[in-house]
Image (cartoon, rainbow, N blue to C red; front, side, top):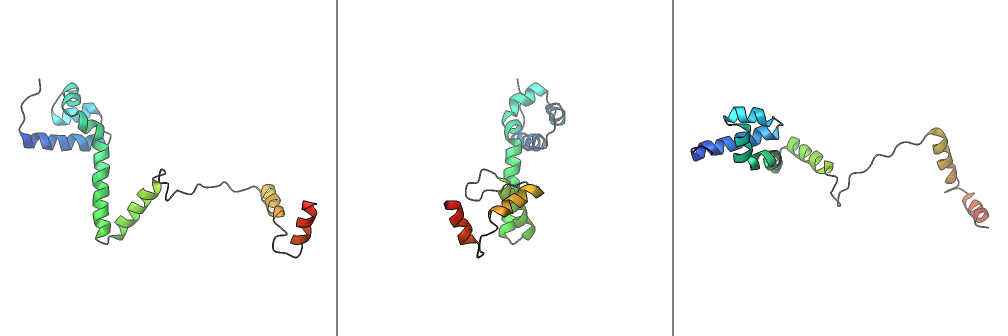
Length: 130
């Protein structure tokens, strides 16, 4: 049975559990820091253990957005990196890197369009279509 704890102490412990969980600290270490058993930790702080990292990321993004809105260029750049890293954005897709062609592949690709824009273009196109 969980012990009665003052509400402010519980809120402080919840923030501590969420922060530690967000950084990847083991449940055993978190339980020791909070002063409970691992079973009590899992029972009393389930939400913080599950969502601590997500909440910490959201809080940091809110702080970055506030700083960017205030004109902080470093915050703007950091947000840009975060937004561009989101590969699920259909409006601003991240360009995929294309492996460069080898010498022979590049020469063949160049040969396919060598006549484009030259006086030979019409003659070669005519020859290819006949």
